[in-house]
Length: 107
Image (tube, rainbow, N blue to C red; front, side, top):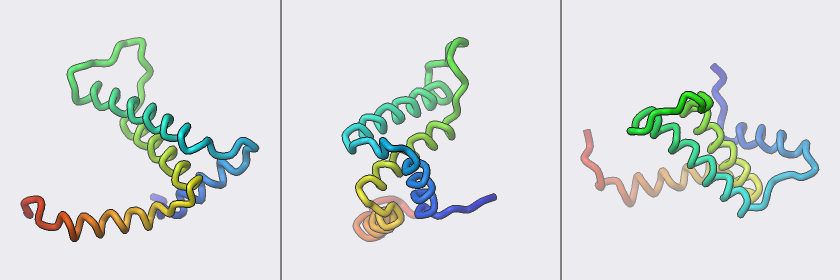
């Protein structure tokens, strides 16, 4: 198994995008893509856990694949805005561990 840091994944995404003249889409276009990918994830979740089975004519996709698509677009958006997702993660975890530390029932 190949463990990668978020930083390494962001670099891989940047190397991939950097090979094309077009580069990153605008932030607004990427938010539209995020919305589209989130809709595809919601559809897959609904097929597996909801009341709407897949039609026989629909392509077989997985929740894992849809989460990967979402992660790719999030990394594109972060890269285009020079945001370090590891730092963003650290900030949100600090927030949850301080502000929300007593919000939920501990095991």
